[in-house]
Amino acid sequence: MTASKAKALMQITELDVSIGERKLISELNLTIRGGESWGLLGKNGAGKTTLLHTLARLRPWQGGGIDLQGKPINQLDRREVALRIGLLFQEGLSLVTSTVLESAMLGRYPHQHSWLWDDQADVGIVKAALAEFKLLDLAERRIDTLSGGELQRLALARLVAQSPVLFLLDEPSNHLDIAHQLTGLLALRSRVMQDQATMLMTTHDINLASRICDHVLLLKEDGAYEAGAAAQVLTENNLSSAYDCEIRRIDSDAGVFFTPVTSNPTSDSMP
Image (cartoon, rainbow, N blue to C red; front, top):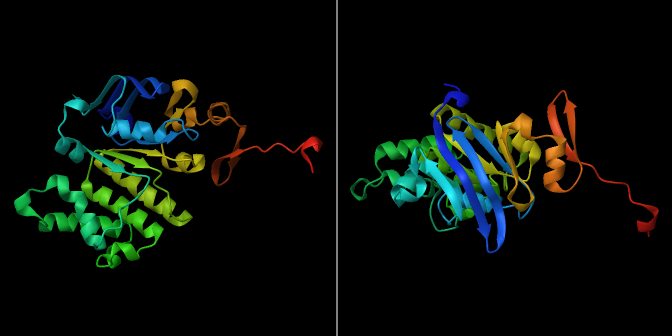
């Protein structure tokens, strides 16, 4: 089943999101389907993280509605939300005293009952997720001995072990080197497509979004936005307007890239 024919996983209708008197999102209408990967773009302060937390039901919204698999999200209990939505925080994992395996096992918590802690089926799911992010050999390592990149891969592995239908990722490429940015996020996208789940990730890297995501939600000033297929949204005009600087598209044998254009300094600005 292609993403375009998949059922709506999340339906966002006339959504308004504000912080104080400042409106960040105005009348957002969006249909997110299984198998899709969305990039959430916009300059600092545009409301990317705020919207992500709103969709995870961590903060209230000011108008409109959010349905998840046909049910209003504010009518789901906490366990139902945890079973369906996985959220990767921008801040990463807390450095508690635990091993890599123990930390990753927390992803299975919504699926477990108190009398079946550390069920072997869950352990198998977690180990498979660790292997996917090349962490299985570090399973017994304490997480406070890991590098920043290893911690971020662990956070992604724990999210995969959680097996949600909606992956909400806040800056998932943080601390990852170039190779792991691509391999890690491409692996996650492959899982999303395989399971007919959905991922929505915030990023400041337009080129990463272009490579990973088939759809883009681009936040602009005063609650305005552009949304749709990545090729339709990622245009020079849209990006230049959203980021308040001229952005050019470069077509090459390696693919499509976007870069800001820096004006030459005037003689008045020279020392």
